[in-house]
Image 1: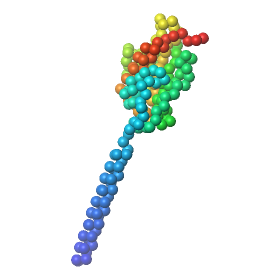
Image 2: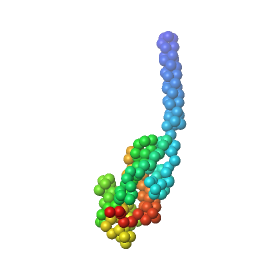
Image 3: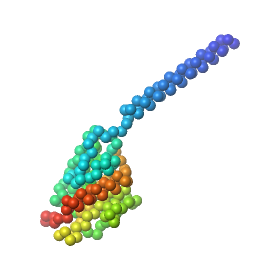
Image 4: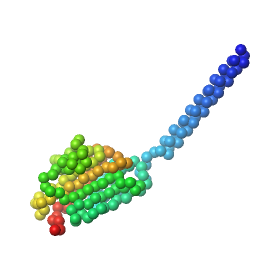
Length: 191
């Protein structure tokens, strides 16, 4: 009987030690995960996208939570009527801004539905700007500016690992459109 009790005590002690060692190991792994796994944007958030000023705080909220390098690249020329502005973090495209001349009659809402299939939208500026978590669109009407046949549309799309943030997207499209308008985008296109 005494041997049986000693074995039981030894089992209990070894079980306690195993549980304590397991808990300590879990605590160490958990603590190291917290310190090394924190998301951090190690890049400078751009204040403009292809020459158009944007609110960098809003842009920061839709860019990935972590990364080291950001690059902004323009594809095409504004003078040709359409261009893309691509934002890449660590060589992965995470945001695309498309600006183009379009035929009058489109609405910002229709552009966002047609291009990105986003039906659930918020609107600003009387509907000339619309946005959702993953995208936004705006329309600058050019009537009375010597350009009667076309308007300027802007479409913004967030790509993974970029982050969807409806509030930030609203601020981003509003700031972008305001800056775009200040640059007088309505001018006759070369034939």
